[in-house]
Amino acid sequence: MASVRPARFQLFSLQDDPRGLWVAEDGGEIVGSAFSWACGDLWFLAELFIAPQMQGSGIGRELLARALSHAEKTGARTKALITFAFNTVSQGLYLRHGMFPRLPLYMMGGARSDFLATTVEAPLTYKAVGPTDLTALAALDRSALGVSREKHHMHLLADPALKGFLFYEGSNAAGYAYVASTGHIGPVAVAHRDGVGRVFDAALAIAAQGNSQQISAFLPGNCEAALDIATRRRMRITFPMVLVSDREFGDWQRYLPRNPGFM
Ligand SMILES: CC(C)(COP(=O)(O)OP(=O)(O)OC[C@H]1O[C@@H](n2cnc3c(N)ncnc32)[C@H](O)[C@@H]1OP(=O)(O)O)[C@@H](O)C(=O)NCCC(=O)NCCS
Image (cartoon, rainbow, N blue to C red; front, top):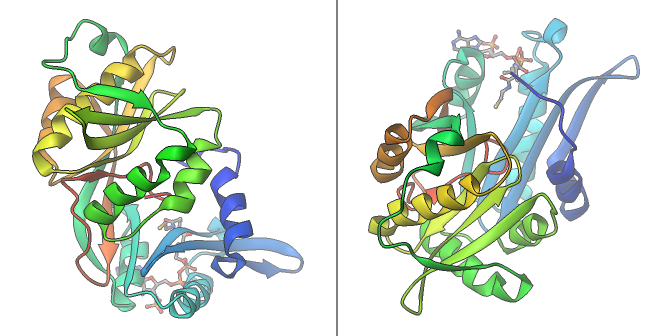
């Protein structure tokens, strides 16, 4: 399931706050790693991996303890992560640490050809996002998630393989969406629940104009409008996942995460 990709977000986070990155070594070899980030009072466990031959021997528990010390240092009020819905070991480990499954999420994908023929009703106006839009992006995050992710937008905007867009209803910002050259959509945040379908639809239309043969998105199970659009466009579930946290947070009908690590 794992794929090798440039460690852009990990390297950004290592520079931003090295307290969130840990490795476990055995005889000079890395046998496990943990990576967490914090924004405002939200702490998020982006990765926890133990080498297959070393799993089940307590290393995950030890690395998680160190990652949780990062949460304490940042003064986190909310601790959260996204893991595979079929992973009994990780969910058992998180349950033992007071983090409970809250919401199913689906990584979904489809063929670009299924998006080309469709027309978007009453399309929203939009513009490409630049560094001067950070305040508007952060305001949308704060209203949907309760925290600003301004530093993460700076990271996304510096990625040449990604484009961000702000969508408007009249002169009001209805939401933002990022579209990658791989055809992946997300993160997406919207100002109002009833706007998510139109913004997601508009992002799909932008992705369909790209060159990638695949289009994908990461959709919360309670975001009915987005899931309805995805299934009507014949998108398939590739990975079922679950949001785990120590308390309720965020409006997941207004925020579509990018992937399990970035959220
Ligand atoms: C998930 C993972 C990080 C756990 O690390 P680990 O070193 O194997 O786990 P540990 O030996 O420290 O702890 C295992 C704990 O999982 C829990 N657990 C294991 N199987 C379980 C099950 N079937 N039901 C409930 N809890 C279970 C227990 O709490 C157990 O601790 P205990 O044996 O003391 O009771 C590791 O297995 C891994 O890297 N898996 C693949 C990658 C992955 O899925 N990462 C999580 C992504 S968020």
